Image (tube, rainbow, N blue to C red):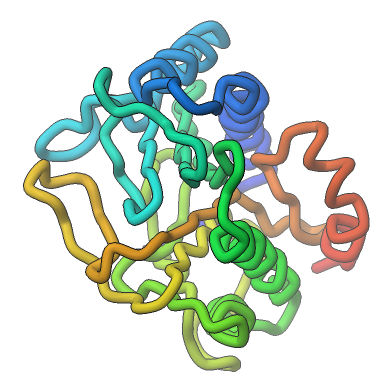
Length: 271
């Protein structure tokens, strides 16, 4: 069941999302060779609790997830477990997926970062993954459907020769971290649920160098590419309001960086 949010609920989700966004500003300067994923996770934890919020991922699921962030390196797609003996190396790409609960509502976002001197193919993978988010979000407009979003993501990534994972999706969000509907990163234009004011969702392209097939490791959390080639992940929480689309999990710097894209979607009007 899809729960459409009121303006008051979106305001509460916005607060949780701004806490979520602040994590990236805190963690980005520490992403360098020699840093353990545990150290990064501790930064995430401190950033969240210092704002009187709760790490949404900590102890989530069965078995309980042991970290505040999912930190996934290279062939790890999502749900990488932070570890004291897992260190970033020069040339890695690392996805940091984070969420915060504040006053009973959630925010969720992910970025993939470059560690030092990264091979050009992986740089392109990270760039195209991020671009595909914006291709998808431009389809969030009156009269469109969920399939229009997924189709835009898929078309952009496959045009560049990359794989679009089928078994992992975006999702609704609000008073729960994961709500209906599932938001696929692939699909057919003109198909699926019609978009409505009050929907709050996470669009999160998870894109691979080649094959879209994945595997779950014995830790029951970490998901890797079946061919062990690299993957990238980019995610934001967004809301459909009467005024247009609002991306809720951008930092201030990111809002400046994407000012042109934001102006195209935030003022299109749905009333």
